[in-house]
Length: 253
Image 1 (cartoon, rainbow, N blue to C red):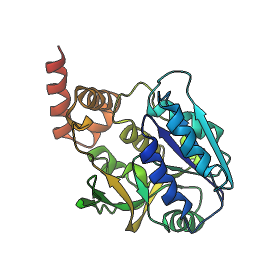
Image 2 (tube, rainbow, N blue to C red):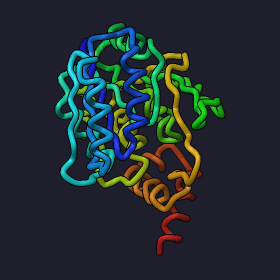
Image 3 (tube, helix red, strand yellow):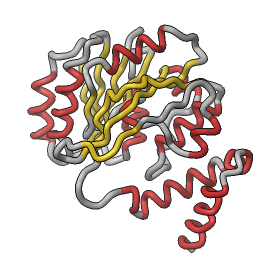
């Protein structure tokens, strides 16, 4: 099975270079890379990075959005152009371990079309690559009740079938945040199963400075998720999220 790696990027050419170095070290080699730049102002810096990796991969495509349109739009653009049967999604500021793609492709090959998502464990690190947390979630098979409770899939670890993403409607570009949680929710509620490689194969960076997790954008994203999936929250009796939905709505008035 062929793989397409889709990377949205914005104003972080240095982080993108670090990520591409880790992708170049993958033991599985049958993949293409699509980088979608969300109209970054520092194009000179990006050109230097792209030049370094232009001939490193089987196929390498670098695209620039005509205007700043957000990460979901950039991901969708890359997915629509992908030639691979499998899509590996990763943000520009994270890193992969060398056997990540190999182990995920092998897992997909072991199962039929009902397997839609394979994710891996992750080490959460700070800007100095010191581990500050870890993701060790284990959800296998029917992930509906788990995903509506929490976003257990670490976004830079995920691989999905392209057909699954298309059938599930791609990323909702109206979401300012929580777009990953929304995407995985729609995939799993479409009847697709998930699996996990029980091994940390990703560095997920938490940077210094303000976090989107506590920003107005994050709260708006949560609110949009809660309203979009309200009946699922009710069905699975998610009182915690229902309470947060009410509180975010009151505070926005």
